[in-house]
Every structure is written in structure tokens, then in C-alpha cells.
Image 1 (cartoon, rainbow, N blue to C red):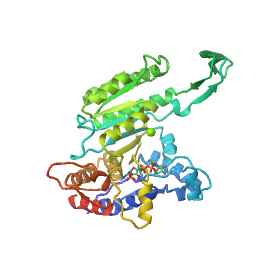
Image 2: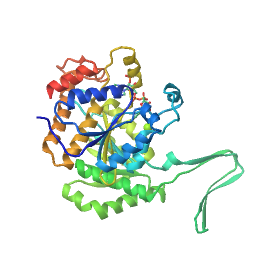
Image 3: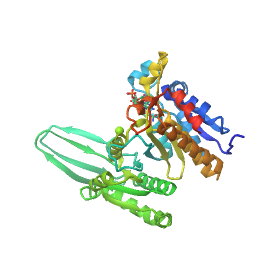
Image 4: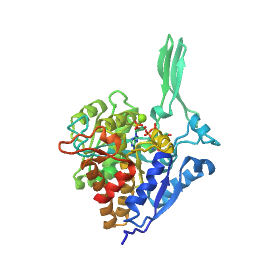
Length: 399
Ligand code: NAP
Ligand code: MG
């Protein structure tokens, strides 16, 4: 008998190679065991164009309604895609739209398997990066200054008051930049981190540069502490986990020396840079999970990689491809487990755990896709590179 659950999960289909993998994952690994109950949104670029991108907004709304979503990778169109798909417009990134609607924080964590050793061998447990996804240098204003100029930041309040501060006097050519953030967004960021820490029973480390940036970065530090003290301190103590703030440079040094197993909360730019560093150090982008968590506990799961365009063009040519489905499988298990938690459904949680274990075990037994075969090393295990479908069939047999 298939496992059932009550409330639908929001399912968002996507593009290219991952769109192909998506249906295979459902057919081979989920549908035989679980009565899939989803509200379906096709976020494939064609349908986004057809619906003037309304489908993306509808999907985001549905995640807010049902609380759990699972999303396939999607194309973020650029000029070349506008031509390739004869698009009506260069539609914005669906992830950006959904992130804005959920006011969420993105958590990224590597899936670890024996045989793929991180470049930093002491990292025996995953490091989860929590990147603040609002403001700072990503919503900046910058100017190139010719020289012979005094440069100021100016705040004009609606009641007529004006506040001004000098940035620099530039005798010769130079550059200036203005950035901002919102208390509201920082509070949401802090709450998302602390909620995720409680859910996954991991410590939170937050690093910023408050010694140098005494107003801007210091505000982040103060807000994190205030939110922690007012809303989370007791819960953390009960769960036996910790929140720690340190300077960002000190934080980097401690992360490198660590054994992993914590959440590293980072401002937007630091998160952008450090997530690539951490992902690479663990081995493969195809083994990175990603989950968007809203401050009120809505979860959207996906793989961290894109639509794997290069493989898709080969696939369209009839060539065999060996694209790694693991991060997308884990997006599904994440969503199913979360639904299991919201409905206290032990069978569903158990299924998610087993499917994850079977995926890991399959790789550890030597059966894997090409990306992993190139870096797998384990004494006594012979590596067998297979295509995506055979890989999933091997997982099913282990399951
Ligand atoms: P990508 O799809 O992540 O692929 C980059 C390269 O990484 C691939 O060519 C492949 O290397 C390797 N790779 C990534 N995932 C893999 C997997 N599952 N199995 C095996 N190898 C994998 O990034 P991209 O080519 O820069 O972007 C393609 C499209 O994805 C773009 O249109 C972009 O807008 C979109 N995108 C979407 C998301 C999202 O929806 N979250 C995120 C990023 C990008 P080899 O070719 O060397 O095998
Ligand atoms: Mg980046």
C-alpha cells in the first residue's frame, strides 16, 4: 500500500535536463511508494512566457498557502534565451520572485558520501550556509567621480529633515557607493536562521565586520542578538544548541578548522562568496541541497545547481547523458519529510530517510553518475559510471 498524506505539496516543474530528471525521479523513486499529492505549477520557461510569468507568482502564493514546495531548476532568461525561446520579455528569475514572496533565507548544505573527500578533510559533517538574500551591494547605487569633488550621503526624511555625512573629498578620479538594508529584513533573516537551527539541531554562527562598520554591520549584530534573546534563547538551551557571533575574519578561520555540523549565517555578499567556496570544497555542485525558509516556517526545496544546459543539448542530440539527480532527489525527500513533520506522519518521514540513505549507499557501493565517478576514491570499491536512469534504478533496488 502506498504512503498517503493529506495536504498537497506545491510542485514546480522546470527546464532542460532537470525537467527530464524530474519526471524520472517521480516515476522511478517516488510514485511506486507514495501517493503523490501535489498542486502542480509548470515553471518551465515556455509556460512562464505563455502566462506572462503569472504562474510563478501563483506558485509562490501556493507555497504560502500549503507551507511546503519542491522546485525543479529553471532557466533565468538572458538575451540569448529570449531569442532561443522567442520570449515576450526577459522574465525575472523565478527564484528571485519566490524569495521575495516568502521573505525567505536560503540554506545550502552538501550531501556527504564516503569516497568523496572534501578538500578540507576535517569537514566530516556538512556546513550549512545561510545567506541573507536582501540588500547590501546587490541593491546599490554607485558613481564614478571625476575628481575635485566632495562626496556625501544624504538622507531626506519625508517630514523635511535632512541628514548628511561626508564620504570623502576626491581631488582626483575615484568611485563611491551607497548600500542599504532594512531592519525588517534582518529580523526575518535572524528568525529563519534560528528556526532552521532548531529544526535541524545545529548551532548558528554569525559573522560580520562590526569593528569597522560600526553602524551598518553593528546593526546586524544587534538585531541577531535581540531576536535571539527575546525569542530563541530558552528554546536553544532546551535543544542544547548555541548561537555565537564573531568577526567575519575570525569566523572564516574557525570554519576552516572546524569539523562542520553547524549553520553559518552570512550577509548577502559574504554568503555569495563563501557558498561557492564551501560547495567547491565539499566536492560537487550536483551534491548541494538548497532550501528557502520563510520566517513563519514555509519551506521550499530545490537543488543548488541549474538546468545543466550542456547535458540537455547532448540529450536532444540523442547522446547518452549521465546527469546527477541526487540534489533533486533530496529536494523531493526534503519536501516529503517536511510534510511528514507538519502532519506527524512517521511513514512519510521514514520514506524520505530511506530514499536518502539508498541514494548515498548506491554511490558508496560504486554505482554513480559521471561527475562523481571522476572524483570518487574508496579502497576496494570499483567505480561503475552509469546514465541517470540506470543510476535511479540502482537506487530503487537499494531502496
Ligand atoms: P548548471 O546548470 O548548474 O551547470 C553547470 C555545469 O555544472 C554543468 O555543465 C555540469 O558540468 C555541472 N553540473 C551541474 N549540475 C550537475 C548535475 N546535476 N550533474 C552533473 N553535472 C552537473 O549551471 P549553468 O550551466 O550555468 O546554467 C544553466 C541554466 O540554469 C541557466 O539558464 C541558469 O539560468 C539556470 N540556473 C538555475 C538555477 C535554479 O533554478 N536554481 C540555478 C543556477 C542556474 P559539465 O558540463 O562539466 O558536466
Ligand atoms: Mg554567486
